[in-house]
Image (cartoon, rainbow, N blue to C red):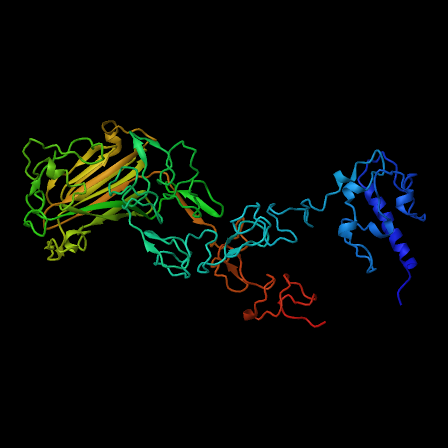
Length: 601
């Protein structure tokens, strides 16, 4: 049996009183209390229809018994005949008159339902604090960083449960996220996309899920991990033969170039420089520090190795006749013996190459400027250039680095030999080798007055510092050595403490049967950054949810990026780990136990 309408009157009366009180809330303390105002009936008094007893006739107030539900809290009428509150209830901010002349209008103190309202915890999406109703909060409302503008987690990302920076959830999931640069659908290294989905040197991975492709430094196209590509294999022109940026210096005064691996003394434009222009490795593409990494200057903590670009140019010996469209072998190789200094001028040319000094003068081991100019310049049908790296190892805990080889034959399987255009020749031990080549390498250093350079080798060796000849071991000879103490030659070489200079080493192997190369650099360092990710050090650093040192993402452990892995309480029922339920917490007695097992009522 239905209750007669009269029985619903008390509930309506309570609602009317509530709205009248709500309209007056937030008013000045100087205004009269709405319970004593002559315009507002006391809650204990019978309230007549608001349409006939409300003094302000300029504002239409609907019948309180049917049309005044609370605008901020939905209270459904028990009757099926009650009008829809969303269409029949005026907005409390504009339709309810001010209860007092001294009380501010409710529209200024009561937020409209369409306005952004703080969440239950008092915060908002983008404040960096995870609140009720948010799946993540990374401190901003930008999209594309794993946590959307509405604080929802994007596919392929993991976000800390306490709020903060999001990271890629997994490499190999075919979604490029976080610090990932590629996604080939696996975690195998050596295929161009490494085990953490970072590009490997010499590769590009333009298509998600597809095999990566090799890049070619020197083709004039910047791609993959290349910083530049000027289409040549020259050094000292701003783009190295490894397609990395080079410092640009004149008499020790350099231009700050992000990614050249040199931090200039007194320069504040770079907070770091790790020798590349890639982000998410601790030093951003604009040479600014990135969260989650520790970066150190290598002059304070030098690395165990130093790798220099090495350009090799292979020649055919003069004893080889013209054949297959190639001219006779080069006249300066496999053609003479004898030590000879003074072959090159005291200053490098404008192109950074040695200049011939024997033009019009007799030379015992060279045969004119045209032939010499081919030694360190690419020349079709005369030489073939190959780019490699020269690895120098740190000696003990000093700032001294050295490369040494008593059998320096880096082109045994390259150059003309690889094309079958030149035979291998036996060395002093009877091993077939590829002779007749030149080499060139360079590096930059901040002069401190403590540097020393030592070279031992054969045949020709010239060392230029600040583009000026510092060591001359020219000619075709057995192993010879030389040492340069830069402090004793500072005036001659134009060096000033605190400035950055280039050191260039040119070498030639011109005759059988031996080849030695030993380069020792003592204190030849420039300030450069080396960054290491904090995640994985076994310590929970700021911004990390966990760090167990392994972070393999197994059940109830820490995952990649130092975020929590799959676990009971993550709101995902993972039956493979024995979960029967997951209500997003690890509390028992709520139907789902602390171990994600169903509880009996």
